[in-house]
Image (tube, rainbow, N blue to C red; front, side):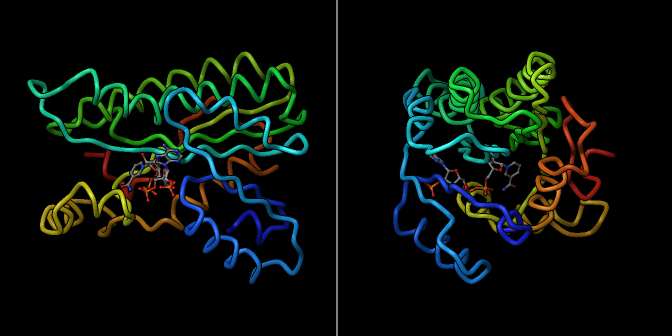
Length: 224
Ligand SMILES: NC(=O)c1ccc[n+]([C@@H]2O[C@H](COP(=O)([O-])OP(=O)(O)OC[C@H]3O[C@@H](n4cnc5c(N)ncnc54)[C@H](OP(=O)(O)O)[C@@H]3O)[C@@H](O)[C@H]2O)c1
């Protein structure tokens, strides 16, 4: 939404056509033309690279935010859980990025932003699969930034702390969220807008000399 407000033409990707239409309605309030596109795609099972075929022309900005979580103590980790979480959080962004670069679908001077998580560095119980899937992306961001710098393409990550979203609703009890929020130095959990503003910064010309970083947006959670 913020990118559309700033004048971008946006291609929105998701699995659920109903939710995509909701996004389209919100976008049409912000901009008076039909320049935005909706793409229905499931990024599971290595299908992310196929997304590139659905783009009409190269893009200036890529934001990979799709992600899933699972809570699993070490003794309950299974290859199915690993496949499903790594499939979306790690393999999909890597394959999508590879495909976009191979097909020259990111313009020179473009910017890629991955949404990672403080979980990769900040240990919490039962979070091994999710944390590892995001840790792999943190490493990948630095390598991709190095490899693509000569093409003028910047690659960065944003690592949010606890943010009020469907993901938290699905994986954390209300009481746990309330308890955790109290411990956040800035006194509240994050809003989606807190993360969006950081993504927009990294995507924009304001960050023209910033590549390979992981911008932590967590209200100070990881200071402790
Ligand atoms: N919430 C937090 O506290 C928090 C903290 C740190 C990092 N993050 C990260 O922030 C990102 C956004 O998460 P959120 O909190 O906004 O959670 P969310 O509301 O559950 O959003 C997850 C998004 O991932 C998409 N997605 C999931 N599986 C997909 C698949 N197989 N193919 C295509 N899209 C798929 C969903 O699209 P559909 O519309 O198709 O379902 C949805 O848009 C994630 O990467 C998450 O790991 C969240």
